Image (cartoon, rainbow, N blue to C red; front, side):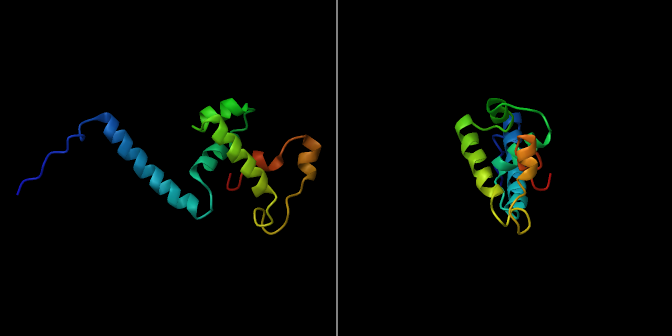
Length: 111
């Protein structure tokens, strides 16, 4: 019994797609333990760099379309008010009120 040759094995695009799939699956497993979607993780990683970005720039860097980013960021607001998000207490808004920015967006969990 002979095995058939892999018709895609020699193509760089196939190797990249296979590597992407493997990395994405492993990352999803790790993020799932923390109830974080991979898209949200990419956004938080971009924000963790400390640069001031427009929503359009952030969408490009996080590999999201602008409307998906808007929905995701709206969800961040709901998470930030959850008692479970910050170890059992509601977030302290005084730092955000004083600086005029959302202190929690600048310091994502695990960042």
